[in-house]
Length: 161
Image 1 (cartoon, helix red, strand yellow):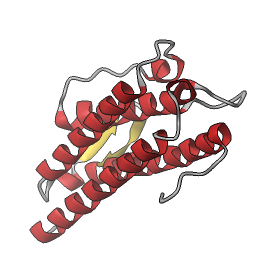
Image 2: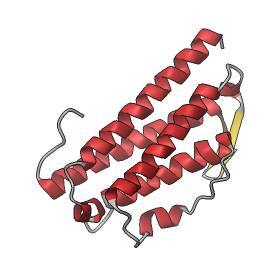
Image 3: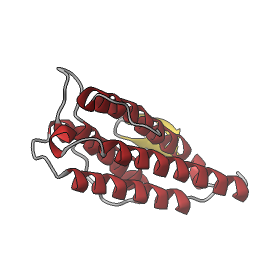
Image 4: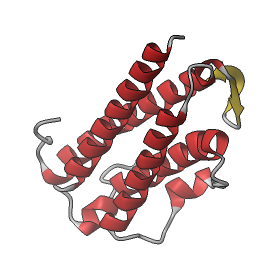
């Protein structure tokens, strides 16, 4: 991979992670503290639990496994946490995770993208490129769910997303 392509990939992924994180933060603005943790359905998760899940996902797959942050994930707790952090605190932790991802992206060399990547939940060998891509598509997937939760809780779709 040429150095120019390396920079293009890192910059493109970084911009998309930041855009999606901004969309999640903006979308949460329509929710009260209570609604942030409320699940209007008999299935699925609250907006707040999805924020915890995305935070854990990024901190584990990128933080612990590539940036070597020492993060230890408790995936089940991301969905069952009963302690309701203030919305702002949960979003700060999420945005901190995104900042770590962006920093890690920018530190990748051309050779790093094709390094083998295996982790719990990703046992089929892939590459660093593929895990950054999988995490960003995972983030986008849950943004759609969050938009639907806002529609159900507040009665309107977020605008500008």
